[in-house]
Amino acid sequence: MTVDHRQHHLDALRSSISVGLYPIQFLIDLPSTAGDWLQESFSSRRTLQEENARMHAQHLLLQARLQKFEALEAENLRLRELLDSSFKASDRVLIAELMSVDLDPYRHEVLLNKGKAHKVYVGQPLLDAFGVMGQIVEATPYTATAMLITDPAHAIPVQVNRNGLRSIVVGTGKLQELSLPYIPNSADIQAGDLLVTSGLGGRFPPGYPVAEVVAVTVDPGHAFAQITARPLSHLDRSREVLLVWPPAPRRPAIEPVDAGELDGPGEPGATDTGDAAPTDAAPTDASTDATAETVTDTPAASATPATPAPVETPPSAVEQEE
Amino acid sequence: MSALAQRHGGGIIFLSLIVALLLTIVPLPEDLRLLRPDWVLLVLIYWAMALPHRVGVGIGWIMGLINDVLTGMLLGQHALAYCLVIFLTLKLHQRLRLYPLWQQAQSVLVLLALGQLLLLWINGMIGRPIHSWLYWAPSVLGALLWPVLFVLLRGLRRAFRVV
Image 1: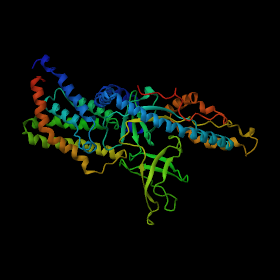
Image 2 (image 1 turned 45 degrees about the horizontal axis):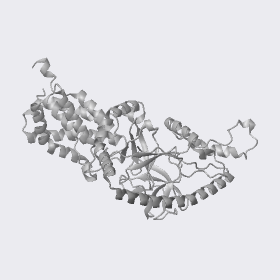
Image 3 (image 1 turned 180 degrees about the vertical axis):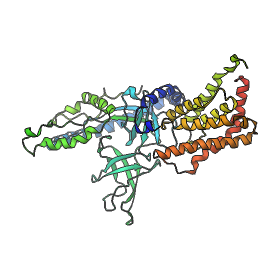
Image 4 (image 1 turned 90 degrees about the horizontal axis):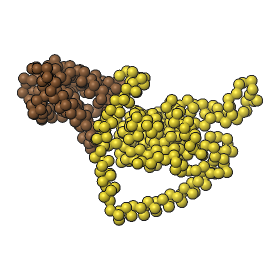
């Protein structure tokens, strides 16, 4: 047990047991999958037509919004290029489904139907259509366990969207409540503020919505304000979730050189290296494989500022659920 | 008891354990999840009591490992708890068999609670303490269900002549 807790020598054993157990999990998941399938195949033409029309309208709406977004993205890229800082490339995503299987009731964990065979890795961020859901804590060949952001053992670095104030959101064990324990009483934060991932820590890609601040209680007797937030993702309702491969951390534009070759202390590469170093060190062995691959299939990584980076994920990169 | 008869009906034991594993992860409403009894341990206790020469600490350990993987817990946590409980059941099996059903259920309550205590202790050590009194509900429910389970499994054992 100690070996499992402290080190990772038993991961192989756990993986092989879990492959043997996959039929059991599949069997339990079967009724709900079969239900979905039945519902799909027996839904009437009319319902499908209605749904199609609705999707069409929504698609149009999103497309319109996307156009604006593309222009903004291009402008953003140009500005960032001027500042010579790293920019956001589009992320590779994979749609996974939750398996209707119960795990330990005292943990907020879910089982996904994608595993190492689909290049899922430990530490990978998990999103749904509304925000960040959690991260993968265990990947076996055909399934993966994800910890939700509301688990008491989970914390995620965020910033307030309004003013960029950075903090950490910690799970409480309640499905509709998160807490921000490390914000001083004097900080500028108020109910209704949107919290987005800050990208610090190198695990979650920056800029995804996480939660909305519900209540801020300032008690002069405490060193920190008591702040609760509500997760934006539908933690107990989403069945389809997105697994994201964040773009590989950008290598410094100028390779670090020996001290003797340095022209001067004002070298822009010097500061760049300092920024990139911690993010380089963050991913685990498994993630470097996955992210290294991401470089090849994200055209945005080499896009010039004149051509806007594709905002939506490249069609080839999105693997659809069969 | 011939050597041939000694290995009769292993399939039934195996099947009952598989069903117990299925019941362990079958999705339940949020409120009932906390009350789910430890089916695997209940079935193991029955077989260890009825057929101590067939089901022992080794099978308990394997089922515990499987349960750990299935529920995503620390590897070996359930295995340790099951080993202890099955060992005690083996020690007490002759006494347990003679008890009337309600008294058996009481003993089972103690055994289940002991297993849960061990799990609670390990969870506390790895930094996942559980503070709710509801944590003990599965043991109580398991003991309440024991007479039903006992009659059911005894029926199975007699019908298929598992010895």
